[in-house]
Length: 205
Image (cartoon, rainbow, N blue to C red; front, top):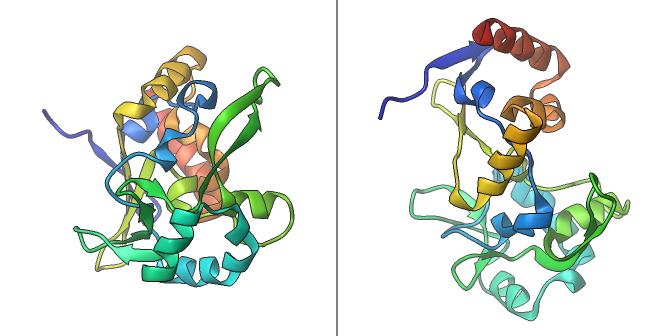
């Protein structure tokens, strides 16, 4: 299988399928399974680890006893098999910051019950902290990688549990980069995102 072409926006290299693939999270179907599936936690930077440690007391009571035990033993993050820093996990798969709750579906305004949510984001949304969640979570399904020369690469990560998001994205005709407009602007700036949109229009043409 051939790899998708690589495009460049500013100093950022990105896979063209970020423009061509469609995506829109469907929490009513998946219930936030990305927080409790997989073999490692969410990628984090050293700065993010420090931010998480500073807000740990705020979210502590939202964490399960098992998650608290893991954090007490190894901290909020660890180094995975690929040598990357990731959030600590429970039972080999659940992010320690996951809790089960209820969320309003923005499209139907109906409650989504028994949904896996992020305690870090909950604290931020209720004004208790200034740190929302790791950038890798906000940018998913985009994965970012910084190379030794300082260049940043963005790849589209295709995960089987997100099939419902791909189906919804195709139905609504929402490309990955449009779905992730807010976190991309927060990460790279409005001017960079505007350039991305221009590159996307030229590519699609």
